[in-house]
Image: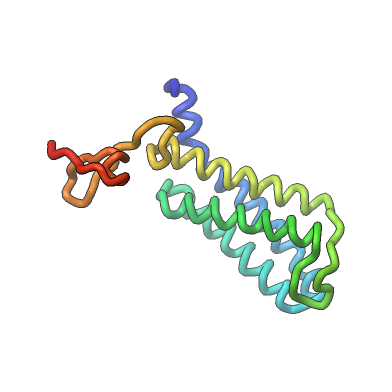
Length: 159
């Protein structure tokens, strides 16, 4: 990876943070209409919006667990959205009835996809995800290096 690309990839969590604020605010915007449908929908959107806004602040740290959590939560939310638009949610007053796709939906899902992608790119730029086809070197608690082969049952070599 060239230095220019690596520098841009290292900034990916900041893009994810901005997109997380966009998604969080979009979720807050739909709380009133979902409250009219079912209170638990409103609770879900409120909690999700809070998570996304708080995660945006934490993403600036570049912490691996924060980035991974953001990627996984947003991928799960995209999956839930897809279910709600194809077969309908299994719970709620309109269980099993697919919802229509709206413009705000598309913006929000796009933001969530960007969050997940940028969080994973940021992790890879920091060496937390191995490049395809390469063995990753990890440092264990004692500080010695071991290759990914050691995790496959081969003994680690002492340095």
